[in-house]
Structure formats: C-alpha cells, structure tokens
Amino acid sequence: MSKTSIFKYLTSYKTNSIIVKNFVTILFIVIIPMTILFMGLYISHFRSSEQQLSASYRQQISNTATSFDNIYAEMKLYIYILSQNPDIIDFMSAEEPEVYTKADYNSIMSTSNLFYKYIESIYLYSAEKRYIISGAYNDTIEKFPDKSWLSSYSHTYSNELIVTPRKISDKYPYCLSFMLPVFNELGKNIGAIIVNLNVETLLNVILGTQSSANELYILNEYKKLVLSTNIERMYDAFNQYAYVYERMEEANSSGAFVETLDSRQSSLSYIYISSPESQTGRSGFISIIIIFLSLVTTMLVSILLTVRTFKPIQSIIESIGEDFDSEKALSIDNELSFIINNINTTIQDKRLTEIELEHRIALLNNAYTSALQAQINPHFLYNTLETINFMAYRHFKAPNDISDITISLSKMLRISLDGENKIVTLSEEAEHLMLYVKILQLRYPEKFKLETDFPQELSGCRVVKLMLQPLVENAFQHGIRPSGRFGTIKVRAFSENDKLKIEVSDDGAGMDKQTLTSVQKILASDIYITSKHIGVNNVNRRIKLLFGTEYGLAVESIEGKGTHFTITLPLNNHNDASTTNERNNETL
Image (cartoon, rainbow, N blue to C red; front, side, top):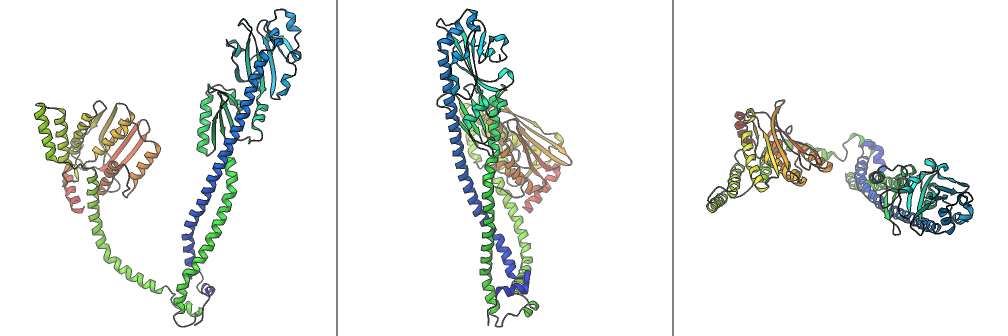
C-alpha cells in the first residue's frame, strides 16, 4: 500500500474534497481568535500611542503656558517700569502746551521696546490735556485713529493692570493690549500707558512649530478669552466660556485630546485641543500592517490545521487495502459515507423526540410563568399580619395607620397568594393597585398622588394578575423619588383597535438614553433576559406567555420629564376571562 499525496485528492475531488471544505471551515474558525489577538495588539498599541500623544500634548501645553506666563510677567514688569519713568510722568503731568507738542516719543521711550518683537505699538496718554504720543504721532486724543481702548480706561479708578484683546481702530491688526493707568504722588490719575502686542506674532512665539489644526484658549480669572488660536472668537465677548466649554465637549466626543492647565504664576487657565485628524493618520499605517499580518497568519495557520486534520481521514482511506485510484474515486462514495448513514438514523430518531419535546415545552412554559410571578408575589404570613392588626387596634383602641396598612397588606397577600388564577378582571387588578398605593402613601406621605381612569365598560376585561403594582412601584421608586419633588402617577385604561391599552405614566426623573435603550431591548426580546428591571421584565414576560408575543409592554421616557409605560392586551370581557383561565391552567 502506497501513500497518496494530498495534492492527488485535491485534483480528484476538486471543490468537493474534504480538504477544501475543512480549509474553509478552519479558516473561519481561525479568523475569530486571530482577529481577537490582532485586535488586542492593535488596542494595546493604540492605547500606548494615546498615552504617548497625551504626554506629548501635556508637554506642549506646559511649554506654551510657561512661554506665555513669562511674556505676561515680562509685559507686566515692563509696563510698571515705564510708569515709573520720570520723563513719562513729566509728560503726563505737564500743564504747558509746548511740553506736549514738543514731546519726543523716541527720546522718552529710548530703545526699550526693541527687545520685544511682538510689541505692535505703545501709547503714552496724558489725561491732563487729553494728549497722546505713539511713534511718529503727537496730537490730541480726538484726532488719534485708535480710541477703542479709551472706554476701558475711562471706567478704571485704580492703577491695576488691564489686559484685553482688541482690534487697532476696531479693524486690524489684532492686538492684546496691556493698559496701566498712571497716578501721581497725590493719587490723581494723570494718564495711561498702553502696550499693544500683535496677536499673530505672539501666537507664533508661544506655539512655535505646533500644528495649526490644534486649538489654544487662554482664559483669565473672569473666564474671558485673553488669547486664542481662534482669533475672531477673542473679539466676540458674548458667551466666550460657553463656547470654549462647547468646543471641549465636541472634542471629547470626536476622540480628540483635551488638556487643561492652570498657571502657577498667574490667574490664567490654558485649554489645549488637538485635532483628531492628527491621530488617525499615524494609526492608519499601523492598522494596515496589522490587518496584513492577520490575514497572512490566518491563512498559514488554517493550511497547517487543515493538513493535520486530514491526516486521520487519509489513513482511513489508505487502510482499505488498495492504492488510491482517482478514476475509481469518482465513481464511489467518499470517506464521509458513514456520516450520511448516521444522519439518516438521526432523522428517524428526531421524529420520535418532537412529540415529547412539545409536551415538555408546554410544561416548561407553565413552570416558567409561575417562577416569574413568584419573584413578585410577597411571601408573608397572613395570620401574623392579622395578629399585628389586632395588637395595634388593642393598643390605640381606635382606627390607626398601623391597622390600615396591615389590613391593606393582608388583602394584597390574599390576592397575590391566590395561585389558581393567573388572569383577573381589570376591576380586581385596580383594587389590588389601590391597596398597594394606600400602603405607599402611608409610608411616603405628601410625596405623590395617583390619578386613575378605569372606564366602567372595561372593568370586566381580563388582565394579567399583579401587573399594575410593579409598574406603579417602578414609577415611584425610579421616577418620583429621585426627582426630589412632588409627583403625579397616572393610570389610564382605554380600548383601541380591538385591544385593551393601559398607560402608566409619571412626571418624575425619567431615564437617560442608555437606560431607556436597555429597557426597550429587554421588552422587545422574545426570550427572558436577566436584568435589574425585575418587575417590568416579569410583567412583560407573563403577558407574552399568557396572551402571545404580539402583546406586552412598551416604554418611552424623557430624562427630567418622566416615563410612560403602555400595556397592550387583547380586548375580552369578563365572561371570556374564566374560560381563558381554565385554558391557561390546563395548558401551562
């Protein structure tokens, strides 16, 4: 007996070969763990990259903050030094007109401003004669083209430094102005020094080679923009902090990095937002490499496993006792013929088990319904409650809250522990609800009110027992109580398109989108999903088991405004209810 190569099996059976089928199957099986493995590698790399990028951005904003803090401190010191310059004080204090008209700006300022390339201009203003000099300009303030700083100066009554962004002559260039009112030795305001920094040059100095797509916002202690890469926003005084906060929220939701830093040298706050595009570019190449490696590795592993799994089948074929002949192989059954025989036997056995399976499903549904209802039904001792009621009445010798709550709870137990009927009339269910609400209001007085609307013509309609109490309890515990305000719970029954609809709504805290989506998913499922919403889930499941999957609960909610549950049941009168109870008791 000679060995037959795997290649010969492939050429004989082609796509029908077990090798090909095993390869395809193994390929799909291997794809899953390989995908998980390489996704883990990618996530690990991505997180590492995120940490590196975050550290890089933190360093950038730290460098930017240090640079601007230094400039801010230098300008503050520089303008205070100018305010002590005797020539400047003489210019602002002089009363003779010729002092102003003959004032030499270059002589007064010397070359002190040449060391700062971001200084656009410096104004020396004398309040005594309303005279101003700046560079080659030497004239009264009325003729000076740039007066947008004057309103801020006129409302200043101390020598505190004012830092504000503005436009020269309300047009251009964009400047960050440092303005210091100057007072003489008698405490009289004699003028002001205004140092204007060119915003564009200043940004180039503090940001350097950083990406222009990134955003920088520098806020003062009043949450006003002092400097920003969004230059136009600096000069829009309306809701500046709200805009910055909104940009931070948008950046977080889009996956961009947001870094904040409070200055240690001043009252400034720095906010740095990176562009998400700068992150996707560097991770794209890594993603391509990981995908390529994943595909190559998956193919190699699949081929190896296919060859190894075919070896036993190859041994069985060769153990027949004759050499493999490709022409004969095409006319006989392949090595899977024994599996086909087993399948035929299994089909016959399947028919025998279907009848028993249907019977067991019916028993399971009955047990399942009882188990769900048992999670809601209280298991207290009825006789103990009667004893408590008697003792309370004997103690107070008159009707009291303890007796009332005990009697109500006893009646509730009598209804809930009656396991014979799974379906009751709407009026009976309403009675049970009123007993529960009475207990709840005794426990939480002045917390909520209940409004009900049960039309008389619907009082005999059949409903699932103990379905309203869990929903009202849910409305109070998860809606009214968390809201912290007096609330209203409304229960309304009505008929619509030959169906009975019952709405349970509240004006409480409502649900957030994530919780609402989770509850809606549970209610829409045809199978039981374990969750923390036991009451709502059980009511929904019992309705579906007793009446069919087209009935059940639906929910809508708005966070902060309330929650609205709708129960949908078949519209049947009281006479049908007893028949259905009997049928359900027999079936379930």
